[in-house]
Image (cartoon, rainbow, N blue to C red; front, side):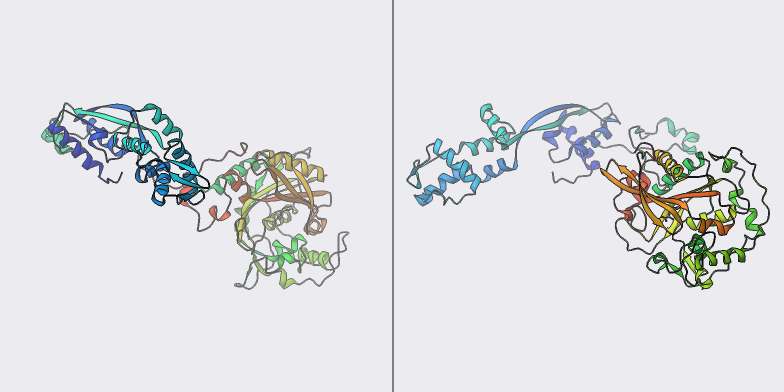
Length: 533
Ligand code: PHE
């Protein structure tokens, strides 16, 4: 329908039609208005008792596109006959009508004895013909039905016509009929109460069917939702959250303290964003007392000590000032890189102090884990730490990579830890996310040995996908901190984006993070249930 009449005009039209007669019938009287417009206008009037109506479902017959074409141009057989007659004689393959049309048309024209074959040519038989197919289709167009039910069945089978459901409303005047909707009062005011006007005022009826207007409110980003689920899992497993507010770190905490050599490709400007201003970091030093006092890792939670393999659970050591010699720590790191120490032969290259003080946007949250483990070394004991926060890598941006993403990281320190324990832990951890039956693949990190990539089977994608990286931290990293050699530490990391994209069926990371994100998606996405993957 092309009628663009506003529902308001439609109510007027209905009221004025009823002014001159007792009844109307929408299919006939308002043929151009859409079903939705008609219904809205009727309900508006009916709620004011200005009209009443009954609904009637019925069916009629309408032409398909093909049926309409035949209606306009004639049937296939007519077109064939017409062409043959015009030329007097026509080659079998030379019919000027479309291939399909020619095939059906020829067959029918033979049957009707309108044309016949003469060798390789067609010649006309009838002089005048009556195109009954077209006539019947015209009848349908006009009456929306066809008297000859056999022909109708055939047309429906040939997909020239089809049945069509119509809702018709029979409309009559209601008890409060008027030619126009009277002015309606929408609010009851103090003045109306005082004057008594409320007694006679014509109040607009409430529409209890109306949907509320959408509310503009804040919404949690999917990454935030998955993050809070993961935090809960970590807390349930006895982990303490590490402070991750420093996006800018020194190369020292990001690389050197992790036994990453200074000429390692990951330090290369290809992967790491270096900060030029300020030109370098202060040398690592104890936290200033004010900052230490606010240390969230000293929160009252005693879960820190709930480690599976430790028999005793020592009480939290009281926070004392960090009086350790950081220069000593730096020279141990120099030694382990340059010439080897703690049983390691080292990398044997000249280690540069200024290189370790270059500032970088942290490339992994393992920088924070390293800081936390060094802190733990002041009072070595079993511990479980985790963090979930942003890291930065200078990568080419594509559907699955951004220059920044979020890392989920956990480290566990305890006596007598083994690689088997790490695998078991990862299986338990990922089971919480609905991922079971992990596979492990040997990998390489400068700071862990052995290192393992973790794979999980993604039922939706039907393949194994890498879901994390893990390993046992090297003595070259832990012993310079002052951790005792029998206190072992393992850790793992994964991106927060990967499970979030799987969960929310996002295939392009730019739909999840960054300036192209559709706010509607953020506002309407569902809560996350990780175990229901
Ligand atoms: N830092 C590693 C990464 O960025 C993750 C990791 C953390 C690996 C802890 C081993 C131990 O992928």
